[in-house]
Length: 429
Image (cartoon, rainbow, N blue to C red; front, side, top):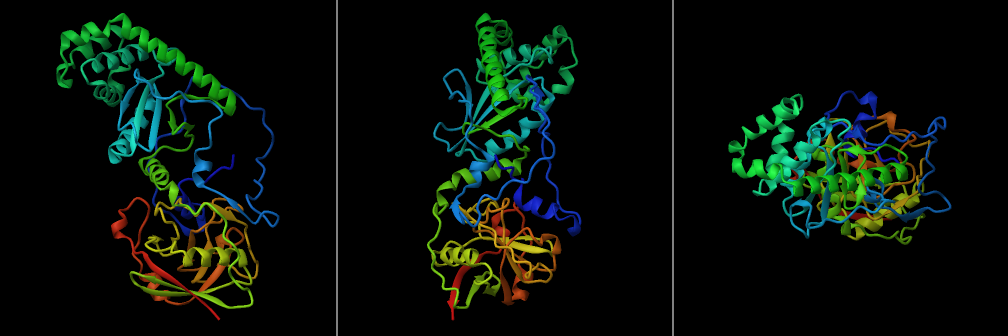
């Protein structure tokens, strides 16, 4: 599986250490509380991945979602009537969460996942599954049964969130003191105290939690064997695929938006429509004015052909500009997430005679070698750290003042604050 740098726009700036500091994103640690340890034999330095496309295969289908969420080799059980589910059944995105209420990493992930579920009430469904790791957490079973007991009164998710939020207080108590403490909190949660106490000790609830635990243990072992890495709590599954990157509201929101917009992609490589004997230029009409780009059809014919094809099909209309400080602007993503693409990728066309040594250079953004798509960036200042990494397919000849006037905008901001492309006109002489 190709390793994708995440999140794209933020890391694009961070990777270029010569650019100085940039805004960071708060994330939950990706280290799980592990139930299974699988050790791989060291194999020396990680090899550089082969380009996704090359001169033999200059263009082929590509969707970043397939890289972020590759198909799982292990079947993830579908939601059933015994699961606790929040969100609509027809939501395009399902988060299946295997978690332990006494796990500190789970407590870190809980507010992040809840925030995304609340931000997309019509688009995200959360399936909650118990995975109490009793060898590590002495009150994990008690906590799981407490959530189930609260669920008998319609307060399952409220209890789970309460236990996560107050985990540092109760996790250090003895089992007896934990029970006393939690029973004293039932009124604040709107629970019938007597019913809660009875249900908490109900053998049927204990049996359900034990069944969930066994199922989660089994899945964890299967995933660990399939991926040759340890799986534990929390494990987040998105639409049936394990999500193994950093967890943050921003990143998960980007993924939700990508899934919602997955049908936007063209899904096929364009036919050759340019004539390299001609001289092509593009006029980007933006909310701040026009920017004219001389396209380098003889230097990067595949890149220019793709750009012209997309432009003529109206791809760039209403694409917003991501503007990172005084270095560059990026656009070309119809989903306006910074992770979208046309449904295909094409080969690199890096010519050493063209470098990012001055403002106005136009490059194709990629997610790794040979994964060029519709996103492109324009330099507002020299940025030689990009040399050799990205194809240059154009140079701005008019409108640098317009480019520099575009409003600063990053993925975490409302799209209402961004400037955008209104249209792209192609001229051939």
